[in-house]
Length: 231
Length: 231
View 1 (spheres, rainbow over the protein chains, first blue to last red):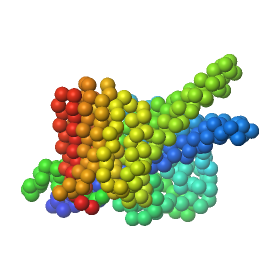
View 2: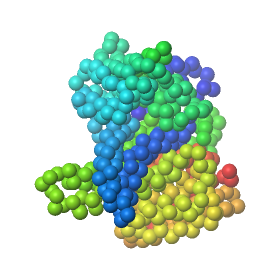
View 3: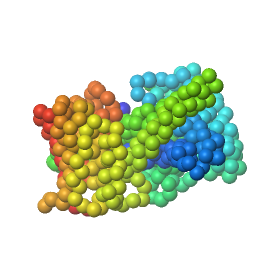
View 4: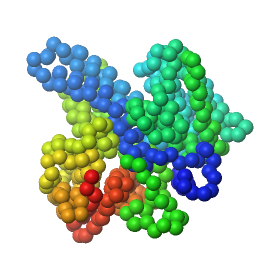
């Protein structure tokens, strides 16, 4: 995981995949923390609202509604946490994941989204970094299909490494400019930090691992493809 | 927030505070994400256990216990999230914080700890980065005093900048070796990533801002002092 990416001012030419972005490590870490806090905030607030209602003696007729808020929030929180532990935190000691576990984590995200997930992952087990790439591409797929459609997520052994791809197709498929900036390893200029940092995290994951990431946006269609060197 | 810290191989001499650590940005961001997920996990699990009990028809006699699990977990979750949004995520648009708000966030952490907090922050408002430093030092104070004691947290305008200090004193006050590695900007060799990354986050925050961080451990006493240049 160590990186000694050269600075732009150094004379030696650097391949595009390894070119360093002008993002400070603290800004990167801070924005990722902000994204996680944002994702956790909505179910946490729902649970707090439910608890407030239950503790309010004048709102005893809303008990069922309160319990429902808590139950939905609690289950969503569990799904978001399980997803984040693999997608962002690289979950501790595990060196690889069962593909069925990854599918479950991805499907839980699509349970709250309009788009359908088409899971086309061939290997039965996936190493840590490709697993992170896979889940982040899954999340990107649901984000670029706000009006629904199908996000096909594939992973296969190709001649030159492990290929992980998202093919998202649907009405008004759209990649936010800040997500595209992040995916190119560029600094955020405007827009939402949470969308930018997911793209930048994907870019950094893939390039630090010595791989490459390309994406394309066309009408009603967005594709992204990561190629990772064989571990 | 941008940093162009020179590499060790560059000819120009660099002050110790700006020396780059051999940590890849992805490892840093990933370990911080893991720390947040870890902090969120225990209340999330408590809420899930409570919900399971409530949904279990054979456990209707444990309803009160279940609601208690949910309530305690929900309140703890809210406190952890509010703390993390300022301490780690640098909470979005806010450029500075009211010191009373920071005190409330710090006290909520001490509500679950054995140590006492002695809040000695002089300025009425604190800018974003010093606020992050303050809250991280507060959390460090509770971590180094597992058997109780007093963590004095001070912040004052000094001649050469803003000085933020932790003076922790108590029986068996102890800094974990991995936390010390992080505070020195060194890579984690062994121990818990969550303790290391908090130290490393503090080190990075302070040095990226052009400040310095020193700490000292003595018998039953641990001090840490950050000096930040005037904004």
